[in-house]
Image (tube, rainbow over all chains, first blue to last red; front, side):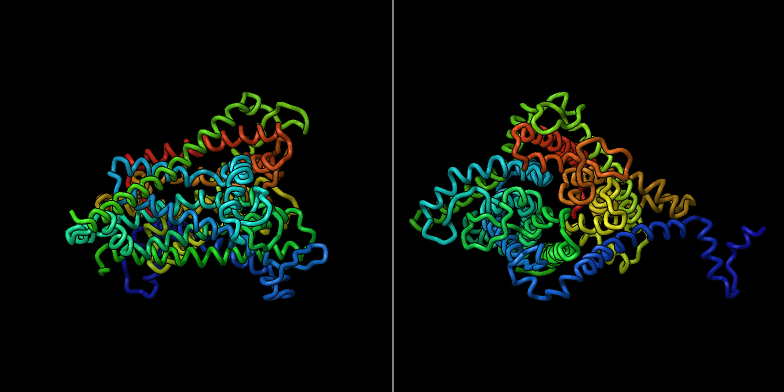
Length: 329
Length: 283
């Protein structure tokens, strides 16, 4: 019969294709092909995304070139587009966020990984994971109705009275602005820093701690001078990850930053960020050039997060490899 | 005990206490958020919220029934797009792929996972809004679906790889082909983990607002079919919160409570299942 003869291996030149056919009949080769198509779709979507951003931003890239990044006139009517205030706002808010979130996040991670018994550490980590799952529009809502009034009434006046001699804390206290956006972002990225740093700290070999303690160091000294330096690269990774999140965050920032393109040394000044301007102007873009300029901003955002995420992954990979006994500190 | 040692111990005790304070502050944010939403949202939520359409400006009452249905439609279609690609792609990675191909696919998925959601929105806009010249549920779902792919893909792969080799060999020894083995033995063994991971992916995109702003847009009324702009809970929260009307703020809190409740509930259930039954994949 035809079906059985196909399974018999032969020396004929078509042997390869025959065995392929038989596999096809079993369904394995079809399954392989179909699942491959799905996997290829993932790559295709990712490549498509990059290509789309590149093509979509061709107009302003050709017209403005590099000056797009260093000029600060954003005038859709006159078709003049300079993105400096948005880039500035994005970087400043992310900077404020990291300034607040890094010490707090690493402190909490140290507590969870080094100090707390597992019975306490696991439930706390569970809550931290839940915190990371809270949608950004929820943070925006809280920022809008709670953080902004709080900033205006108490925190900003207090900062002005104590640190007002610094240019950072001058100017009228509107409530909205770089500082408020930075605080909301800090709250949002702390869970990422904690989760990843805790993971990295837990992967530090036990004998490192024991050696430090045996040499007579206190608990804090063993943690700060031995364990943390050992996990340094991984913790840096968690910070890059948090930075990438902070740069790309849209909703919460849009709701509290004030949406005014300004470059000001004062953190109290209202500002604008890349993601926020895309969110606000995209549907109302007045022309092709305006739309393309917004897409170019999207491209900038994509590249920034792409680089940071890559660095973060590399750093975390380096530490976990070290932690698994590949080398020593 | 000399003074230097006493000082070192003091520093140690103080710093360790401070780390505890950091952890306490971080965790208390969650309860602060929950408390605020339960208090503020609880005051404004009522049966009308779930059953009525939004009212015109100035009228009191009304609800967000259209946004709730809109969100459900968006999520349904998003899972239809994202889950098959992620699931079968994950099977390919775990069972069929060569290391080189797997590296490329994994890399693409991780890259996609890190893309800010607003950029995904731009992509969906260029692909599904611009050519058809109108906003639609489909475009919004496409954006959300893309965001579901990386999580589904990577966790499917992780959970399949976690299935013991002996199970596969046993099935093969009984004469089953590779595909039969995968579908009848390996996937059922990893089923619970994959399902919970998909749930987590759904919970994540359920709260996404940015990619919907210029794909699904919004709608003050019911959205018939799949080809019209539709309102959704997150976008409603955004527009209502930024509006100048007290009544709309009230509604925004109520919508926030519903969204937060749903997202946290799914997360709690999924994570409890994961921690009990199967090993949690490390991303």
